[in-house]
Length: 108
Image 1 (cartoon, helix red, strand yellow):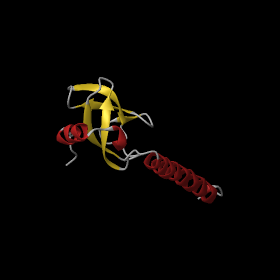
Image 2: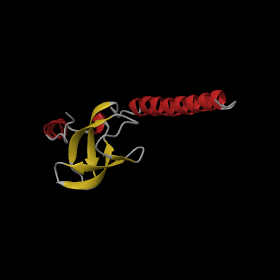
Image 3: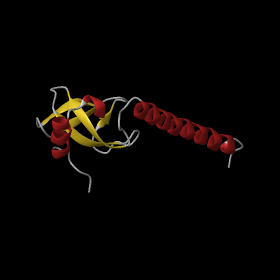
């Protein structure tokens, strides 16, 4: 073991904790703004289609994360698109029902 291995571990742990803190703070801010990130979320693609997807900040199993948006497959239009979460307050009851009926690929 080299003399720097302890400080390397501390630096790695510090970096990991900073990344986790950023995700936690980002999630809390998004929720405060009315976005229900951290679970099943209604999203809108660039063509305006609404659907539900699993949106957990920092965890991407079926999309390319771009922070507040992601590139993901739209099951309504059957295309790849940039999608963004939609605030629940901005949706009508009919839109919520439509999005709930159109969930993207579920993870087994």
